[in-house]
Length: 526
Ligand code: BES
Ligand code: MN
Ligand code: ZN
Image (cartoon, rainbow, N blue to C red; front, side, top):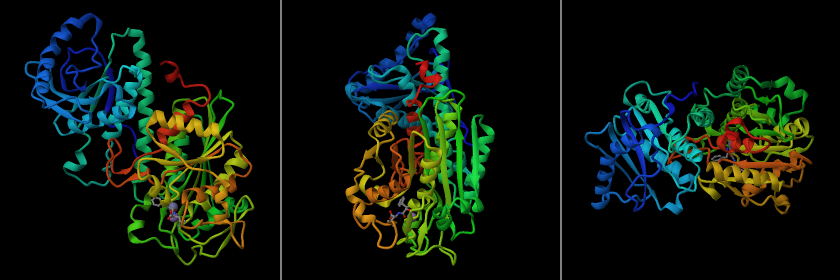
């Protein structure tokens, strides 16, 4: 799988070159685009070039064909200028424009450009005066790159296969008259953004690939390839014998119905100089979730190749941490299995002794994620002993019912950690919603015959599933769980998130790691 971006991104200055299409942002009622920048030496000439476009835009306003309302887009074809097309994007009211709206506007601009024959497009860094120009670059880039993503690995030929390759270059026009020595800092920013986008593409690609390709073995090989490719990352794959020796019966039992052997993958990124705080990211890696003997309905099973989205996100995040050389020690722990019925599959009524020693009564083989995570979380918390343990899992349908496809569920036992995740969420637009992590719900997972049972009844499914997980984190006091069941895969496109795998969690985790201890060089340069 190739996750490098097919579109080339660059920075540029000045208006004296030809452009296939240039994107302008206009606030409601302002009539003049914002965020334009000129090159010091040629500013006058450039303004002269833009002037005829401004008067044309004014006519759009005069005829009320365009008002600058958020979400409105118009493509205009100016005459006698170097630019074939101008894509006008409404930014809405100045005081209401925020990061997420900017991503969405950039996404609309890409959609409009894709409808034309433009191969090379230029973005001006429009945005609110309250946003720093570097942040505008970040948000517009994110909206654009995440919209340009296409998954057409299995389209044999024809127009659809080619779609998306059409826009080959995107340039960002630096907004202010900046000095030559500032350009390298901007370049670094752009490179950071590209690196993160590649990780989102990586996560989306893995989620979108069928389960016939993305098996536990495939995830293990992918992890091994990443460790080879990126300095600072090491990998360890535990297979059947080692899992047995370690008493990881949760992973072995859930994976026992499949001919594809279960594995526990651990990636580790150790920078030469690291902050005190260390992080273990745990990602649910159920390569296919049929429900097992508690079989899902055909309809509910349809999307279940996505049940390893947590694994994909934590892999994307740790690779990015290494590529950006973040000064934080990070581990990624991935229990990978396939949950299918067969004569060797586990059964309702079975009792499993997990790696922690705690016993689990299985009452529904479709609540399999929490069982494999029990072993993985115990390993992460008790053996790796990081400051923080964060798991990402497509854990419950209850979460999707509660929050739909916009917010992931967040629960945890450490206010500082929850605060850090929430802040990262606000910066990235990967939204999280805090649920109570309250032991008063624990009664629902008490078992008559074992320490816990794997289902918690009809109500409060997000909470009872996470309290189940908490049992295996033991005494660790820095734990957070993120339920991405509703956000990992979308049944229809939502702005810059396409139909299918969304890559949710990658940007959230990277941003969290960037702000944890010390900051990366790119951020420092801001
Ligand atoms: N992978 C599913 C959760 C899921 C459902 C993710 C829909 C995305 C969309 C999980 O393994 C599961 O089946 N959970 C059950 C648990 C129940 C049996 C207690 C669920 O939520 O229905
Ligand atoms: Mn399930
Ligand atoms: Zn599942």
